[in-house]
Length: 379
Image 1: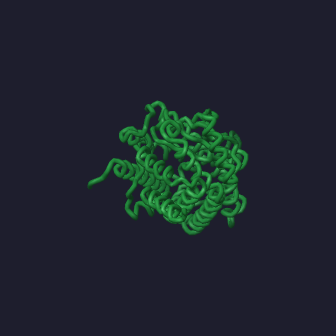
Image 2: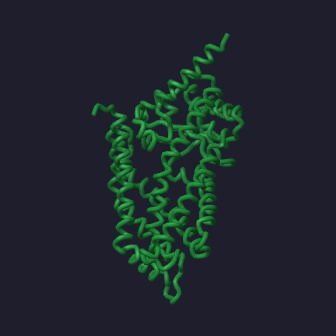
Image 3: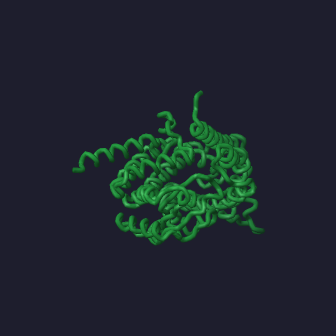
């Protein structure tokens, strides 16, 4: 196979991603098929008595989720290390040491566990309270949590991993704030995003919602890109807020979550008695719920990616309309693609399954066409 460096990198990344998903799925199947799910439930319920005869359901859920989470993390840790550390180092993107990567991985796992605990407590509380239609209030609660996380991420989650400081380049800061004003988007400020100690990749984003919305520009982007290039990259990010893509994403996520929970309800009704589950809220059914939800996520991923690629194309057009600078757009995309090892020529199947953005040559071609139309329209 005659592959370039970027194609090999992404092929190996995809394989590792699929391997982690398969391992997680096999773990869930093994727990269900071997009876271990029931054994774990019994241990979790025993732990939840707190020295009394009555069990504390919330504590049983917590004990079960912690055990399941730790099993999955231990099983997939080698693949995660290969995908998140070794591959990036081998292909010249990663700059972290093992100690730094392990520290970040531990933080991410701790946050993941907290979120998993919260989601499981909500799901099992609704299962106990409304076993016939639990999926409706559970979907609403999880959708609200997603919206709150999007709002709080810049001030709660991101600072746990990255360092942000107000951008000191006055001219660029004012230029980006002026760009936001022209787009009709209120932002809290412009911040430098310390990314260079972790990776050589460059990035910029508009993060948060409402009062937490802010522009962040990585130090790797600031170091090597012109103000024109940075402006057009941020114009693309502004487009997602102008078009309401963040809100649309939250709504779409809520719909997919509801679909997954309806499928989970059907699985509990059909397979629960055969698996020996004592009730809809039996903790031994959690591996089944996770397996069904994962399957729904996999089956809907191509549709979600196609929807995302459509929004990305629209954001590119908006960035060109707002800045009227196709040359800066093309140079920025070309340099970012090379620096970040973008997969320029994925197969149609790979694009359909895995890519949330259009391939870079398509984006550059569209920018050239935009520029040509502008040149023809000029007197």
